[in-house]
Image (cartoon, rainbow over all chains, first blue to last red; front, side):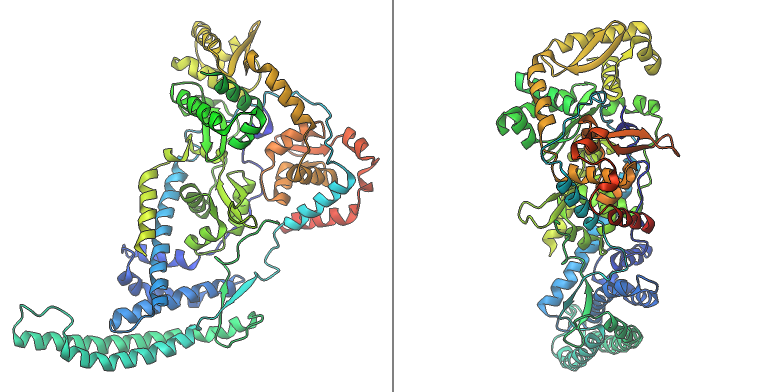
Length: 279
Length: 177
Length: 177
């Protein structure tokens, strides 16, 4: 048997990978902890806790991590605002962001579950590789492409391909999106105007079916709805206030905000946009 | 068994490592269709209670022991397979197995974190393979290695746990948007 | 094919070297008569135009390629030995030249991919040699062969271009881990 057959994965370096959890992991944990399904409602419910979690993030990964947490947090706040104030206008772009977040969470949830199953199956009923029948063979057969030059070129290529550790900041990409702070401000404005409209809207078109209700009941429903909106808005403002603590943190982002042109742009860790490329 | 299937089986045995269908075609000077037909014959035989089976993922094929004989052989191996695959590794392998071949960006998208180091780790362990994307040569795509399928005891990915169901769910998520 | 014949075929495939009938019996915990019967089944099958056949000489058995494929396999072996190494193999060879004796895990770490099959091919071509690690018998270390050094025209590896600098970089990576 050759080495490959007896020790398939032994004695290899194990690279320390993500010791921290990403924003989707954290969000999924929060939802699973409450045994909820992934939807607008459950996302709205865990928003506050998620933001608190993001706020507590520290350590060497801190900045990079926070950037990706902030972009998820901004979507959550939007969902929360919309759930509190259904009349709030959401741009098509924001709709996509929300749908996308839900889709990613569902995929991650499924892949986690599948991963767990794979872990149970792994190595249980293995298909074994063949022993090396030809290991006795040794014929010196140099190839044409072996030479000092090609060896030197190859070692340099190998050296260049080793990934650089944290010393170097990851390449980041600027995306012209609003910072969390800006987002809060504009959301607050949007909600206030939506709120004004809501009261008029309510008097014209009740949002729940009142077909089977008598007049007194209809009045009651309308009053409850109005109260709900007011209470919700106050709750949201409270949330926003808390979030401002995080919004303050955007100051920190500015430090590594190399080449930022527009104020209020946030650092997006280039997860999906920076592809690893063939060297 | 026909002559071509015989030659292919002999070649795979002699080679002793995963080869692509293209390599088979080139080395044996046989048309791709002939190769595919013969691989079909060999696959059928694999089901037929033989000791040796054909393991395949996409373009890659190799030979391995029949899963039914695993227990007996396992008892004879002195070296334990290191099973220390963490949660993130398993999650990443799941994405590559059920959605592969995938780009890193697709893996990062689902996981919400940068997967560069975990991919490197899996590559080093020989559990995944890296190739240039067909559509964009500058980008890498990742696929399960035949070694990974072998460790999981499956001859092809459709034998993975709940394969159809998981694929259907993934497609449903895509449509929801 | 019966269950015992299946197990014996799988065992021989996995083992990859000739074993005596007695060893088979002991390893698989089967009576000698059962082994003989099953070997009979495997021999019959071998005649049936398969690519892999049971080879028996004296008391020993092993698997091999079907005699009908010998000519093709021989030609392939020649071709394999004269083929260019290619980028990946050259990279591996370069690491072994500069850093040898070096463990596979160290090579894998620098390259970021699994090197097991490449190492096997470099060994067969006599470009590298393998020995047990002084500190851990279970681990192999790889060094350039003397023939390779002669072929490159270097008397000592320190004559390789930028030797000190390359070694320093390689050592820097190891420390990071």
